[in-house]
Structures are given as C-alpha cells and as structure tokens.
Length: 296
Image (cartoon, rainbow, N blue to C red):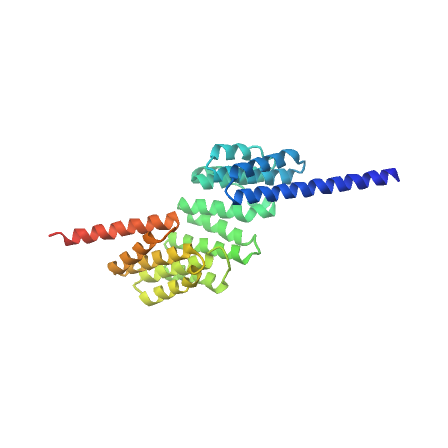
C-alpha cells in the first residue's frame, strides 16, 4: 500500500513538473511574441537545462536560438544550436540561422547531401523548403525543384502544399519556362484557394506581372483586383497591390500611372521595408528617365 501511495505521489509530482514546464514555455512564447526575445531566450535555456527528455531539450534550445536570431545575435544562436543533443534538430537549427543571416552557400555546404526523410517528421518539410530556396537563390533549379516536390510529399496541409507550388512557379520562371507554363503553375494555387500565409495573394500578383509583361492589361488588372479585398484588413496587401499596379503599368509603358501608384506606396504610413524600397527604387528610375527624355 505504501509503495502504491509513493507511486501516486511521484506521478502527481511528475504531472506538476510537466504542467509547470508547459506554462513556462507558454510564457516564453508570449514574451517573444511581445518582442522581449532576451527574456524568452533565458526561459527556453532554463527549460532545456532542467529537462531530461532529449526531444524537449532540442525543441527548447531551438526556440532559444530563434530568439537570438530575432535579436540579430547570430553567434549566440549558433552557440545554442551547438548545444542541441539531437543531430537532426541541431542541423535544422543551424540551417534556420544560415537562412536568416544570408548564408546560403554555407547552408548548402552543410546540408546538401542530407537525406531529410530520415529526420523526425515535423522537420522534413521545412528543411526541404529551406534547402530548396537556397538552391533556387544559387540558380540550381533542378535541385530546387526536386526538394520542393519532395516537400509536397511530406505534408498534409493544404497551405503548405500550396507553398511548394508557389516555390515551383518561381523555379519554372528562373529555369526559363514559357509564361504560359508559369501562369499555369500559379493557377494551380488559385484552384486550391489556400487560406492564410498570403500564398493565394502572391500567386495572383505574380500572374498580374506575367500578364503585363505579355502586354495583356485586362487580365493583369483582374488578378490585382482579386487581391484587393485582403487589403481592407492588412496594410501589407494595400502596399503590395499598389506596388503591383505600378509594376503592371510600367510594363505596359504607362509611366505616369506607374509613378502614381509607386508614390501611393511611399505615402503609406507603414509599408513593409521590402515593398517600400522597391517602390522608391522604381520611382527614382522612372523619374530619372523622364528627366533625361525632357533634356534638349
């Protein structure tokens, strides 16, 4: 009877520790979301040090390294990655750091020969996407396509499958496939109608630019109009649609209309830096060309 009682006590104690760890992890995630990455990182490191389960240690150190990345402290992130006991998790963490810091060549040198299908299932899809993106950025379209196709086989998520098609469309464009083939690839995403992640919107805007490059204004504008409802809820898509309008009119040779839309992006309260930089650069180029053409 005494042994049964002790087992019950140990069970309750263990349950309490697990619950406590879960609460601390939730607190760390909330702190990171609020921008206090340093405090969140410290909690994740403590959780990793106090736990005996290898997977939990790996996941907590992975989250700690992500906090360090968000602070821009890549050496600290790499240090934390080096403490992860699981080789797949450690390598995955280093891949994330290299991707975040722009180390594509280092990522491929480290992970180019790895068979990710032997890894824990939750790591396979994102690892393949990361390596595929690195291959694409390096112009290795065959390798990138192989990784994206494999990634699609390792997810049941409609959104993630759609993301692989988005990546494949970029591969097809980079590989020099015809505009019709690239349009068809993006069209598969529109047929799937995935929700979340901005994948559907990106497909529409990419198709708009392709139609404009072909001189087809009406279908190009129709693709942008399909994205406009999202702008009512998200400032990012307000900026993105205005930028794409500018790109479409610029491709069609309507420079005054293009300039007006680029200026709209610049005038927005808080567009994303990437979109703002693109709009400013295109605006400068158009205005410089206009000034040059007016000189006698």
